[in-house]
Image (cartoon, rainbow, N blue to C red; front, side):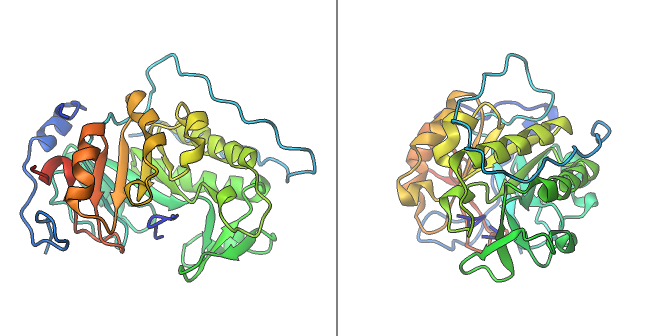
Length: 319
């Protein structure tokens, strides 16, 4: 599943994240015209110096993958942003022209499309910026797309997503420098965290014989390299490996766990004091919000194109 899988498979007050965020969370959600048969949805009309990229690791060999083992629990407060449960948020990925009118404590926006000035403006408003990019696929429209070519790195195309192919996540000799440069860009732009997509390739028809251990190695590398730049990192959709990765990641970003009845693993993030940013596309507020709010999830009802329209269960739902 992609950010759509995208672009694309209670009552406590929000925890205060600083004076700026407290002011933001107290604002009422703007009025709007509903796009679902549910309560109305709003519509809209300095980081640490970036460390050098890591030395690329060699291509995979025929050596059997190591056994899956859980991570150790951190013993210190992280030096990067780690949003608590019930953090309000917005995600808009279809345009770099971001609607900043929503009373959300965090905005999930595209790393490449979103201007640095927009991220700076979010900070001026006391909000956090999560920067989205696809870690497990090649997208032919990205400015660094040529770096993927000529390395036998691309696998099968994503169904229904033109111009996008899975990549061999074992090829860190090629992927390592590319993704390191993307993380450097996130730090340079002032992102507070990143949302790397397509990090459950071992469950998909990628064209590669990926194992769960391959995925754990890749995902932990992403978390380690992101933290090395002083940024938080979200785990996207890889529910089955949450028991092994909850300590490595700072929050979860999930699509349609209610639609598929697969929300249970996400409780581990809430139990660890970390936010679960949940997106539903086809369900009603009544079908999602009561349970999401009770669990401490930060659930949104969104259109499939991840445009600005948004219904926030924490802010908008009234039983």
